[in-house]
Image 1 (cartoon, rainbow, N blue to C red):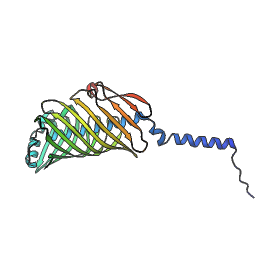
Image 2 (cartoon, rainbow, N blue to C red):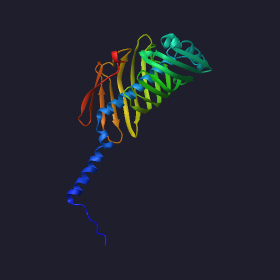
Image 3 (cartoon, helix red, strand yellow):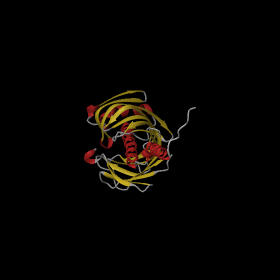
Length: 275
């Protein structure tokens, strides 16, 4: 007869300890590393900023009151060398209401760069103004890599000076800190044609692997070649764990963050001399 030998109490305690240790090394432990979540939030936002600059580039020289998508495409293609610099870094071709850009080492609006890859923009007109549907795959923007499928709605504010771009964003990308993120949501960019500064407000869902976040951006302002102005913030929340992280900007090349768990810290930004 075979006798079943049960492990001793001490052995059982050791097994339980090993199982708990193994569990602590899994996703639950990773979720407690807020510094990684902060990096992912900033990578998602950096991808969105680069995407916004590319959509703005396609409509930068257009009249928001234009109601002819073919004429919009004609002008966008003809003025590409005035938007992307140096002038010979971009090749643009037009067919009907579609413009195809080939970028090689370009600097875009708000000193966005270094841009390498292909960008397609399809123009249309709706009740909200001029539309620009932008798409790209593996387009490089300095330290980021972009996959874009986003539609921007271009309009002019009542003051006659402020231009407004509302973007319905989707797609993915790799941020400058190396995190691969997927995004879906809306954001709004406003700027003055005579200035090289823009404001950004947005709310979108961010996916990193199996984890889902809500990323909300408010009062974010930045001028070309400079670090974000003081006063902007990003709130990054996990949907499954209920953890909230707030990232704030003070005008320097370092952002501060704090979490609902009581942790806090700082993180360097790619701006100013680091851009």
